[in-house]
Length: 334
Ligand SMILES: Nc1ncnc2c1ncn2[C@@H]1O[C@H](COP(=O)(O)OP(=O)(O)OP(=O)(O)O)[C@@H](O)[C@H]1O
Ligand SMILES: [Mg+2]
Image 1 (cartoon, rainbow, N blue to C red):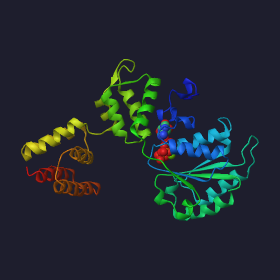
Image 2 (spheres, rainbow, N blue to C red):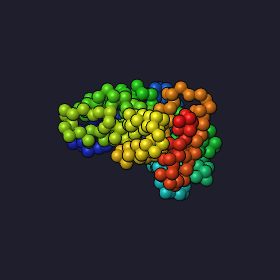
Image 3 (cartoon, rainbow, N blue to C red):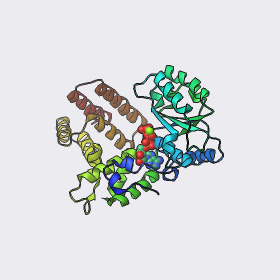
Image 4 (cartoon, rainbow, N blue to C red):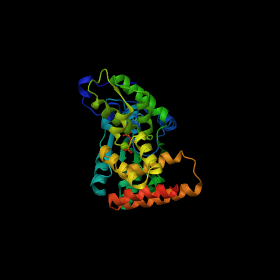
């Protein structure tokens, strides 16, 4: 691993930037993509690329690392044009920028093409995407486009057919675990085993989320050299309900009378600042592990999704909380 920047310049950076992969070897958990794009480069046959997939899985990092590998760490910045498609810019501005970039010569250039990175392309209107297809064709001799997006279905078919597509999967837990160990060692940060498991679970394949949680958890320690980050700290940093609080809520709903259950849930929510929407997703996750008949399970899911919808539409919190308690109690015949 090569983290070449000096301590003083990296000290204040957020960890997601400090630990952004320097080379393709630092991109974890995307072996297929990395191997294939590397092969394209060594064979000198780089096509236009489309990287799509959920946030924090390494799309931007991979293309930047690839650019460094193609052009070298010194000159790569002159050879790439990064455009953020969701900036408030008309297609004319984009067209002009691309034209200017593609038509200037590079003194240091050893490669015959430059790279244009179009980030968040799925945020472009379809008119803008359609205008792009002519641009791509026009400049294919001197440039390669790399389009980055979260959802491929939001891109027009014309754009899709011009690119070789790569899907970035949510990162497997072992990839995040490996990177996490690496970062922890460099930062001299200690986590309990439970806390590590919680980070892996809560990040759901998103490395950016994992790194942000780790950095936030370090900031909570009074003595970062000796103190250990616990599971509770991790849940607090993410703002997610703790499993034991959820289980406690569920038990009171199932075992106590309605008034007591409501009061206990209300108290817990006030003390922990727990949002009702998180309570619902937490319950659903716990109930997945319960053995329930298909009928009971679908009943709970359908009714809880109604409550969730009502909350998103601005429904009254107290009424919706009562509804959650009732849905669970009635489904279990309490
Ligand atoms: N596969 C990976 N290997 C190592 N680090 C990663 C990986 N994916 C993400 N990261 C870390 O997370 C940060 C964010 O990743 P990146 O910007 O590449 O995500 P992205 O896929 O482009 O997300 P978005 O869709 O939100 O733009 C990086 O700076 C890096 O530190
Ligand atoms: Mg990105």
